[in-house]
Length: 487
Ligand code: NAP
Image (tube, rainbow, N blue to C red; front, top):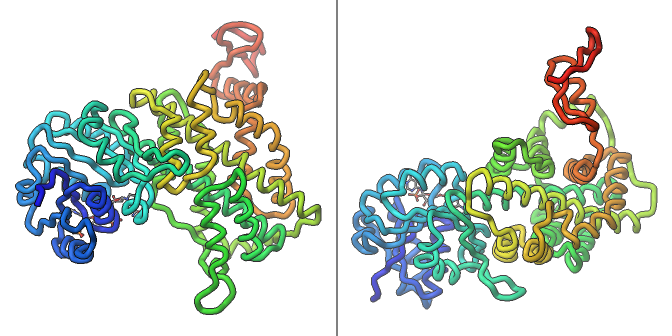
C-alpha cells in the first residue's frame, strides 16, 4: 500500500467528498477529523469503491497523522472557517517542517488568510484556496481559486493534484483551477465570486417576482420561461436550477413547493464581506450597488414580521401590467442579461482595485472568468465572453465597455428601463434591476450632479471645490461677500 503524501483534515461534507475525489484521481490521501467517528464513517461508507485502497484513515491525534503523511507532506484543512481553522493550524504547524504545504480550503475571510500567510511565512508554505461547488463539486469537480506565497511552489507541489480534482470546463476540458496571486488572492476572488452569486440570484428572484406579481403567472409558466431563457445568452446553472425549482410540486400535495417556502432569505456573510471590502479600499469606495442591493434585499426579506406589519399600514398593493405581455417578457430577458453584465462589471472593478490595494501580483481576469465556467454556482455561458474581453487587446476600463458587452448595453438598455418602469408602476420592488440601471447610467454620464454636492459641501463646511474651466482649488464666501478665492 502506497504511503500518502496528502492529508485531508475535516471529514464533514466538503472534506470527505474532496478527499474521495483525490483518491479517485489516483492520489493516496490520509483522512483525519477531530472526532474520529466521523473519519471511520467516511472510510466505512467508501469501502466498496474502486479507490478505497487510496484512503488512509487516521483515528489517533495529529501526531499520528503527521507520522503517516510526513513532516513535509501536504495538508488540506477543510473545517469550519475562523477559530476552528486557526485551532487546527496552531496544533498542526509545530509538527511540520518548513517545506510542508498547509492549504486552508475553508471559506476564510481574505484578511485572515493574509494574516496567516504572514504569520506562517517562516514555518510552512501556506496557501489559502477558495473552493466552490458545494458537496457535488467537492466530490466530482469544484472550481478552485488558489492563492499563496509562491506560484513556483504551487506549480511544483499543488498544481497537478488540484487540476486532477477540479471541474473541467465543458467548452474545452480545461481544469477550473488556477493560482491567482499572493496573500489572500484565492479567498478574495472566492468572496467576489460569492458576491456576484448574490446579485445573480437576486436578479433571477426579481425576474420571477415580476412574472408572478406584475404579470400574474404561476410557477409552471414561469418555469417554462426560465427553461427557454436557458437555451439563449442567459444559459447558466442558476437559470437552469430555477426552472427545476419552480416545477417541483409540494410533497404535501398543495400545488408547487416554491409557493409554500417562507420568503425570508438567510446569508452566511460573504456578500457582506464583499460590500465591506468595497468600502475599505484605500483609494476610495469601489461602487458595487448590485451586490449591495442583493445583500440589502435579503436583509429586508428576513424581517418578515416587520414587513407583514408594515403591509397593513402601507398597503401599496401590487398592480397588474396592462401593456403588451409578449414584449415585456422579451424585455425582461434582455434586462436580466444587461443587469447581470452590470453586476459582473462591479465584481471585476473590485478585483482590479483589490489587486492594487493588497498586491496580489496582477490578477488574471480572463483566467478567473475561465475557472468559473464549471464547478461553481455562477457557471454560465457568458463567462466565455468575459474571458474573451480580458484576453487580448487593451484592457477595457470596465466590462461594460468591452466591445461585445458595450453593444449589448447599448441595444438592451431600453429593455432594462422598460422593466424598471413596469415594476415601478406595478408597485413591485426590483432592487437590483433598479441598482443596475442606475449604475450603468451614472457610470456613463459625462455630467454628474456632484457639482451641486460640491457646492453644498463648500457652503456648509468650506470643503472647497475644483472648477471645470480653471485649474486650482477654490472656496466661495457663500453668505459673506460672495467672493470666490483660491483655497
Ligand atoms: P462544516 O460544517 O463547516 O465544519 C464541520 C467540520 O469542522 C467537522 O469536520 C468538524 O469536526 C470540524 N471542526 C469544527 N470545529 C473544529 C475545531 N475546533 N477543531 C477541529 N475541527 C473542527 O463542514 P463543511 O460544510 O464540510 O465545510 C468545511 C469548510 O468548507 C468550511 O470552512 C466551509 O466554509 C467550506 N466550504 C463549504 C461549502 C459547502 O457547500 N458546505 C462550500 C465551499 C466551502 P468534528 O466532526 O469533530 O465536529
